[in-house]
Image 1: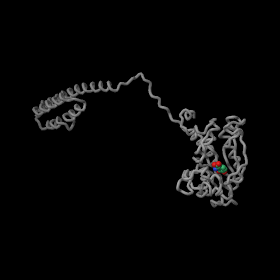
Image 2 (image 1 turned 45 degrees about the horizontal axis):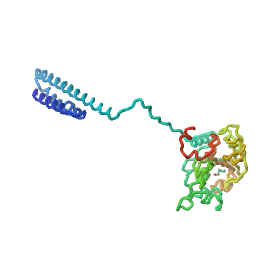
Image 3 (image 1 turned 90 degrees about the vertical axis):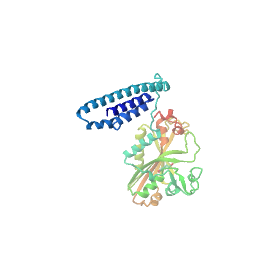
Image 4 (image 1 turned 30 degrees about the vertical axis):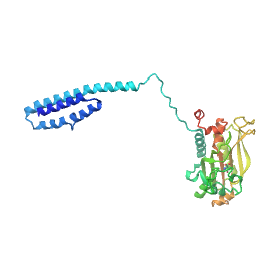
Length: 344
Ligand code: DAH
């Protein structure tokens, strides 16, 4: 047994001498000294020896183990130092260099504005329509037909609306108003909802117009809803969004899906009503269209206009954000210039 131990010791020693890397050292340690290593399998035989032999052979075994550990460590340290030096040579780090600045992302101003508007209406008792009821790829049926828009209305023209190629009647929605129909088809009054989303129009892009933008649609249908309710909700919204100081006006207007209809203007923040290129010299900026839901629309979705009435509204998110933050070009929202986006 003594001989066996010495043989293993010698062979381990010569392996250590030949070792060329930390990997070799690890392999040697595994081969000789690990629990399943050669050395241990011999040590297991100790239990069959006489007490006397156990003591001498046991002591020898321990000594050999310690010697080998020592040899391994010496060699390991040499290689470690060598590899470290090589690494330091290659990957020189200039600790005097300043660190890299990692800029933090911000919530996009349009997302911020949408959230703010949504939360105002939620506080007024409106809930947000689920996204299946507010698709961006729509049919003419929801975007126009059911909203009482005549077949020959200019908004249906390809000059104004994007049609999906080879799919008759399929369009990119030009307004969020179609969500009104989806909701009224699936819910019974009382209905009190808003629906934010992206809309598309075939526009020439300039400071005021982009070929996609964002709207927030609103719909309130119940018994005894009047134009007074519409005015009350709109005024409250404007007060909460702009603060009471901002002058507004209700202008009578026309939409096929509301009767009567109104457009609501807010005084231009850029020129304080004096007239500038942003407000086309009028001193006012239209922020939303609204009105009492047309009897034909209610009938179309099977809601009895003799029992129920309602109001609807649709506002442009970009416009509301531009007014609030005095932004004079809609394209800034979509250029993704960090110098712009970081200001919010
Ligand atoms: N959909 C209209 C537009 O895009 C805005 C609008 C006007 C929405 C009146 C409404 C409404 O719900 O009642 O210009």
